[in-house]
Amino acid sequence: MKKLTNITLLLFTVFAIYSCSEDETETPQQNPQTLNIVETAQATADLSSLVAAVIEADLAATLSGPGPFTVLAPTNEAFATFLSENGWADVSEVPDEALEQVLLNHVISGNVPSTDLTSAGSGYTNTLATGAGNNSMSIYYNTEDGVKFNNVATVTTADVSASNGTVHIIDRVIGLPTVVTFATADPNFSILVSALTRESSYTYVETLSTSDGTSPAPFTVFAPTNDAFVDLLGELKLESLADVETETLTSTLNTHVVAGANVQSSGLSDGMSIQTLGGTLTANVTGGATLTDSKDRVSNIIVVDVQASNGVIHAIDKVVQE
View 1 (cartoon, rainbow, N blue to C red):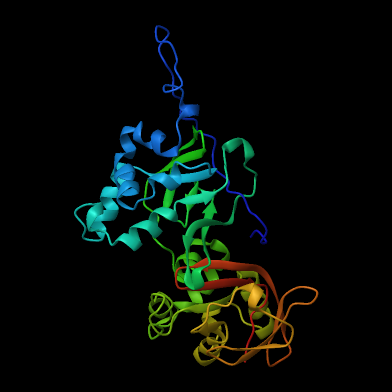
View 2: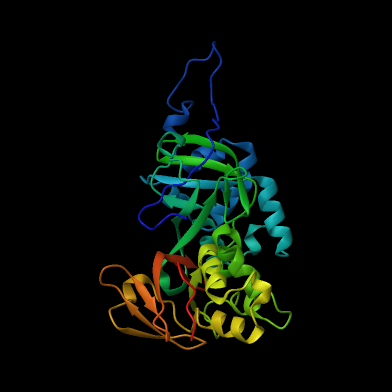
């Protein structure tokens, strides 16, 4: 898992080549380097639905501006699927604010061509959409099996150059993520997801999918990594998650969730008391952000401010308990 800082995306290098015939004299209008992102989309037949959505959301001027931007561009088929799944006939039926935010969730500030990409493998960066608390929305990328964003959309063509940035064509529209989206998309949280769904009586997934502005959202989730859960099982001298008593598991999971607050790392301070659904934790930031539980178990906060539409996730390296 990547620690915070400005994490770049990792994509396979796939080139979209625009060319003129030998008989044709190239003009600035024909050179893709002179086309901005909107003009590039307009010149690409399979992005006509994206163009219609951008115009409907009144974002054409923004994406024609100086940028630079990196745009994840859904194909026409991707938009058709998105509209059908939500019961809309066309983009004009999508609520204006929702359409704007969904589109902005496909835009990353800065130019991210393949030549600038690292071998990070997976991590988080921010889009121009806003999540709970008007904070910049996060997006998760993973390259283990193709290049995927939020475990939803795969890059089919990368590095379409524009005068004000780069376009990467994707096969799905990326919806606005909840904290559940990131928990299920990031394999570092797979044991946490198993814990949240172990009991048929648990409603964690439904609860943590609650829209911002609807009680008990927003949420602040301190999410233990897989290694953190492995360490807990060792501490309890248990073989697997299935061996943890239901009462213990429920209490433990509750201790990692704050309801009704979207607390980013900048809101933490030394000696800060944090009331979770399962008890009280104490935050400290001097020398590195940590959480201390009632048993004086100290967990390091190793990734901060993974911002979703209905809350924020901070990854921690030790399971805390009441």
